[in-house]
Image 1: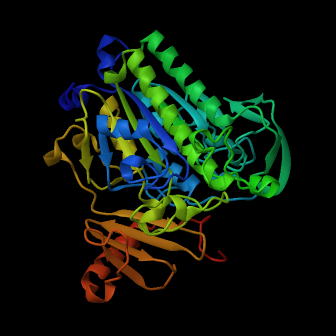
Image 2: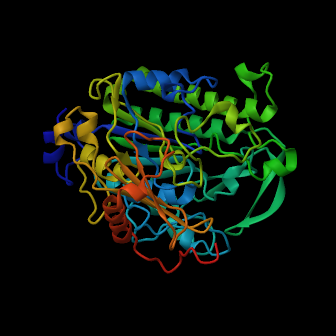
Image 3: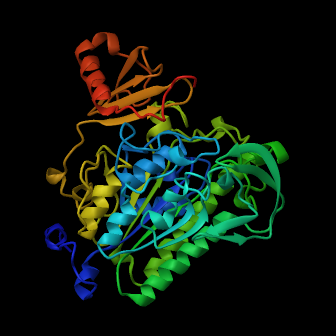
Length: 473
């Protein structure tokens, strides 16, 4: 199937056999998985055979970035194709009014773009961009392009792997777990830890996603988009207060006999469990004989956390990179990205194309024949997937900003990376990632012209937002 054909198919293509030239698209998102926590990215202790195999069967990106260094804004970038200087949701906000934590009616999501091109759309897992609370209802998944939703709406709710309920569309689905409520309020929702653990939400999401795939394969009437937003290996932050172990998992599996503390066993077991479930999904596509018609992408919403009580140094989760979640150094924002599309994406390939979450919009639009929304910060990486590197348009720069811990900004342009860890004001650090991916040597004093150029990008990229300021953070 050719890119020329994709470009020629119009938005008005009927749902006939002709429309089946568009591939199904599955985007699987891990939560707080570090760049170095998969075997194919250098991990030595945690076993991830299925994701390693996925990389050998497809393409592994070395320079792919999350939208932000924390959850909600990163997912907003992923869904809208706008970078952090332009999105509406720019941080993990609290308070009773969820309007600044929610997508708005005017926001256009990847799901809406694909739906306009005839796709069935589903979200299983963690949403975090709308809630059944004042100010948050505009961002509910089914108001943002998804035909079907099953999972968590609220991020604090998602911290608990054994919740009392989940959402199916706009209805609460009661579970058999019992939860001790914590006093942390977020959008009118209080988190907590389970005192009775029966239904593990991660397993339910994967099972639900597989049911959706099976149903779509039976119907064969239109292509589908599945956004599987897993919560593994995020910590149950509230759970650490109730049990001292924030890495909740039904069993430690192959790590049960390790001479490690339970939190370390849990961290490893969660990632290996996720790995096996990705394998289940890939196997299902093979069994249904739709693997060649389905693009599967796997990534993480930001860098690794240090919140569940595990020993971070044991697993070296950022690999060769500096920093982790809530940093704008590479470890906080550079993430794994693996793409499998048998027969189309060359097997066993590695790409150093510099790309990020915002590019999902243009990529999905090109794959589906949909029109890319105007004024997005998104460049399709389909040419890279097809091995047509001469046709791949590069980014002039990528941009991030972060409103916690006093405020931070960062920009990458080619091999250059600039970071301001004290915004506004503060010194702009400069790194040459081609020789210093670990950002160990600040060379800003030696390259004032480059610093000036990257500062110009930062100033260009940042559009002030009335609800987001570093003041008081």
